[in-house]
Image 1 (cartoon, rainbow, N blue to C red):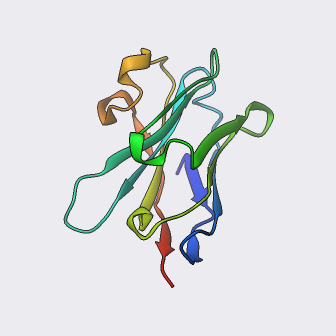
Image 2 (image 1 turned 45 degrees about the vertical axis):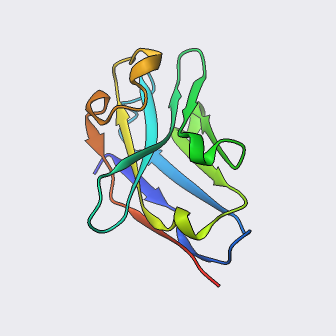
Length: 126
């Protein structure tokens, strides 16, 4: 497994969590990494992406202002800081990456990415 995600858990509404994803093969440092999320019975949806070259970021509208994606190139790690969590953020969060450099408009497209890590479960509930 090239991507190792961690950091999920149970948190109350309004709380925060920080997800981490390690690129153990140092494969994606020339491309982009992203987070998607999925709830049972629904599609896997885009959350946030980081294109390493240029540091470009993209977010789904529902998390803008609450979530922040960042990266540490030296550690081959991408983070997703999730603040002001809501119950609708409850999902299995997946980390993904590509060694290619997607165009900005394609950062939210699942087809831009080639490898997926295991999910980490985020539950927002009181």
